Length: 351
Ligand code: GAL
Image: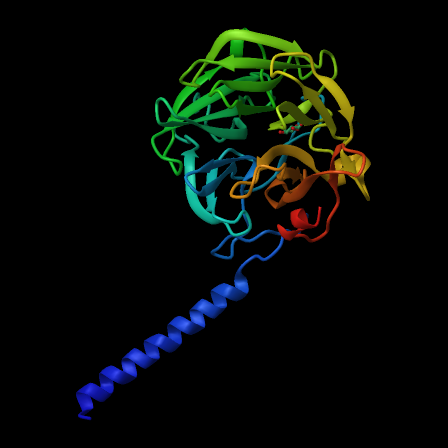
């Protein structure tokens, strides 16, 4: 073998060894189970930064959108309540095939530092983004809670994109049907009709706003539900032909007891079922607050859901963690969320 060939052979072998080594490092770093309350790392080894988030499943991939919180947490004085905040940086997006390993796709909606009057200026509030896909317009539509630093604006902001990973174009904010809107979520029914659930009337009453066919505005039809019941952090899902709303009480960044409610139609009457959490600290939602319920895809539709909670660290908001837990049917035929300190998808198979 002449020297040139030997050099080529050695280079190929070296490249192979490097590849095998980096593959095994990647394998070691792969997340294999959910560990609620622990720091959750993305595929680059950075803590996942997507708070108050929502998940979209599109063409075989899950996308996780959330508040990207960085920098100092400060306490706003003179507002009469404990208003801890971080400056707005934007909405992040992560993608995943297995719900455990998430790749950072960047900020899909960025703050606008150069315009102090803009909704997305760092001094404002941008929370609880949710993204839905409109099959007719082929647009990805994001709604988020947009507010002043003292939460006096109580509005919803809308942004649209041609792709799930953005960039999203901000269209502006408004009060849906002229009413206050703070904590919020979106829900698309099987017939393609979309709704925004939002804590309205100073967080006292939930408004369910039906959206226009392009999902970018309320269509004018809405109902008041959970009147005077101070429900926040709504997460809505459909199971076995019925509609469920998981929500929190109204205690700022501090935890309280979760509540599940059910209805036969989205805008119909809702019946409160009580607290679905089971196990230690279930009276405080395990120190979490609901943000989304994910229907797990790729298996038969037999009621596999993952419930996503935020565990807020109000004095260091960027260090807020996530609590993802399975939602299961318990022995008494009721939906429940049992505490697990560590679990994986095989949990569902054991049910
Ligand atoms: C919570 C709400 C959070 C955030 C916080 C501010 O009740 O769910 O999204 O707005 O208040 O204190």
